[in-house]
Amino acid sequence: MSHASPKLHNAMWPGLVGKGTDEGQEPPISLEKMLDLTAAAEVDGQKFEGIDYFLFLPHTNPEASDDELKGIADLIASKGLKVGSLVAPIWPGTVGDSAMGDKAATDKFQSAVKMACRIAKIFNEHGVRDYGCIRIDSAEFGVEAWRADAKANTTKIANTFREAAKVAADAGERLAAEGEICWAGMHSWKDMLDLLEEVAMPEALGFQADLAHTYLYLMGYNAPEHALLHEGYSEAEFYAAYEKMTDKLRPWTIDFHVAQNDGQVHGAGSHDKTGKHCPADDPNGRLDIVKCSGYWLKDAAARGIQHICWDGCMFPNATLEEPKTWNTILNTMIQVRNAHGW
View 1 (cartoon, helix red, strand yellow):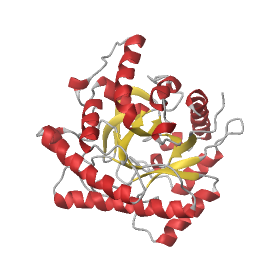
View 2 (cartoon, helix red, strand yellow):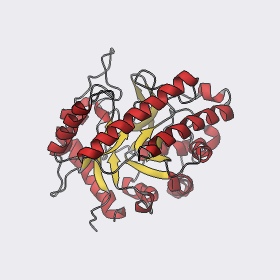
View 3 (spheres, rainbow, N blue to C red):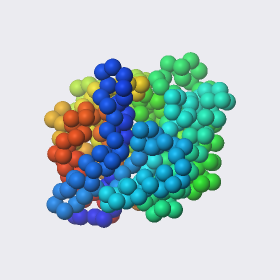
View 4 (tube, rainbow, N blue to C red):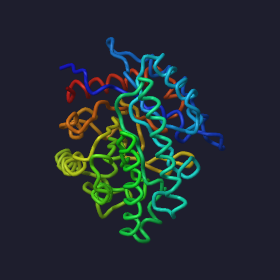
């Protein structure tokens, strides 16, 4: 059955994350090139309807003037695309710093969230954006420092997130905390749930689920004590574990990434190892994308979800620049919407 919602988005950050000028890194792909690749995809008359957008250089200067940002909004709209969720530049080396750091660090974290809210307001007033969240994480790469005092460090992150959620709420925005195994305090399904419950602001801060990253939550890659599966699992064991995890995190889920994972971790540049995103038709993919998406999209509209986004983070440039990649992804997104949309 065909549906009009959720809207189908493509992420822009695969053109940036893991790319750069260091030896061995591939160069970034420009925003306009990523927009053109997205806009060109088409399956049986259906096209991508929007993008999710990383607010950092070289795509965007988070301190750009209002006029510069309006020009970017014009560019995106000229491709027939809307803007959905935004990624705040909360990491060390961008605008922000660790959410479990000292006051100077957490002040920088809040500044990054304020910048993202300012850009969201400009895009909203322009008309290119009228739904979506602002994505954050703990901006603390790896989990070793967190483990030194897990309870206290989770409280530090929760306090930072709570203040950031107040900033977002005052701006009419919601924050979505990304579940990914490389972010301290968010690196397992149980630690993520504990953090969300400690923040305790579901109207202002929820969870951003990604199929590739949450697969590794099941396997307990950075938290063996919270593993729900072990290699050699059966299909029945997989779906029992998947249901347990999604039942815990789905009520918090306000942003959703469609993706594939082959059971491996991958890292590039300064981005620590995390779930390896694979092409939608990767023969080594561990997930039935359409079926697994359904566990996260139950009652999605009631949680305010209006779009879903494909995430191909750290795909090689040759893969990203191949039109077939995007048609295959778009076809998968259409299947997800047909099965679970409204």
